[in-house]
Length: 257
View 1 (cartoon, rainbow, N blue to C red):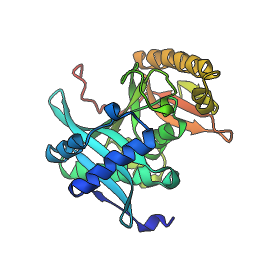
View 2: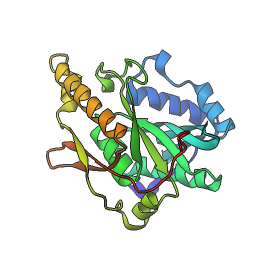
View 3: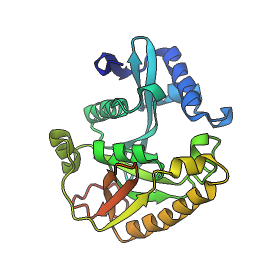
View 4: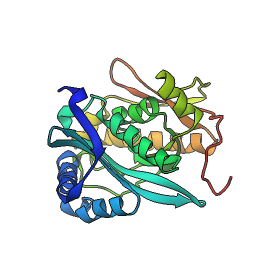
């Protein structure tokens, strides 16, 4: 695959939006009643959201869907889905889709994009924290209920919230230098590389549940104490590690501030 030949742009017309629905089915293998329907992709385009596509020639190989939201009187975007076909993963395509979302948001005066992600998904966490500069300060327990996607492995759909403050010093530093600003690590949470195989088989799923339950409590305690996820490491064996610190920036749409 020639990554330079991939075109990233807004989706155009109903046929491309139908392809987004089909890609969603292909990648997550949801049952039909859990799919985001075509109408929602259409609505997102009409009400100030985003439907971005990645195209290899005429073939769509990925998409990003976001919808507008408000909090404490501020407009932001909630990025609900980011999907890339299996054979095109690990090529930077997800990051390119997110950067187009950022460019479009800033052109409209929007400074925050949020999305949820599974704390057990190691590669996704690395993308969000280390390649995009998002921070996490909130944890939702079983946000979507038990889903039909095999990727969830029948576990509760616990989610971290990624906050991508588009004009923050953190994000600007990452885009300018390729690295997040340094910080003093105050805590860490480990995710074993074996988590994927543990989730995939019924006999080992209790191990995955134990990791999820242990990490859930650690996340809740860390966030309650005011810490934020500011770094993420992957070692040679594929294990993941969330790193917490004090974020010295005050970007927030919280009603408490």
